[in-house]
Length: 207
Image 1 (cartoon, rainbow, N blue to C red):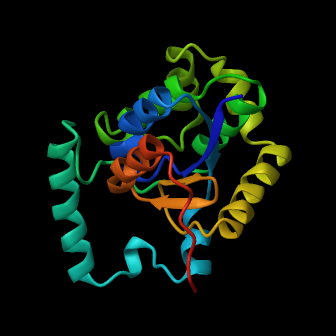
Image 2: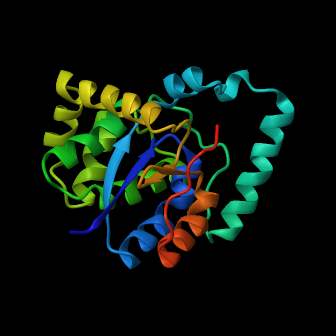
Image 3: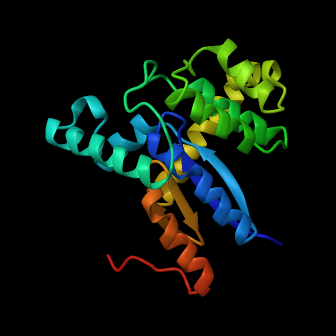
């Protein structure tokens, strides 16, 4: 049976976009079964001591913009640092991922196109018609998944992901949880790969 890893993220996170391709490569290399767990970031931030962008000190925001440029170059990507339709309400887009998993469909093709749609093409992922087209282009039943995304059941699953994230000590996007060890941020993917390569036991907090 493949080893499992929990993948917490939101489509509104540029860091999730930056790390997604490399993370999937690591998952494939080590035959990991990825549990996609989209999570609402605003609630997660507030409950774990973080701040949304609009409430952060300008010093932190300026540094964030520099880091985005560094990692954009490092990962070989081209995207807008402040796309026209970001930030946006990610509920419907994240819900499409949950709906795809529920339907036993791999959400990865949708995620790759959806990330690029926000950061490269500057599309609005809060728009249902846009999501339908992205999902269709990814080979998924777009209309069906977008309609399902708005359901109470998907909302409940989204909330459960938030609770699971808190229980796992996850506080941001993206986060990769392997055997209870949290790797937060796309800049920790290399450390995740190291852990998988060495086969070491998971680290545990001493506090």
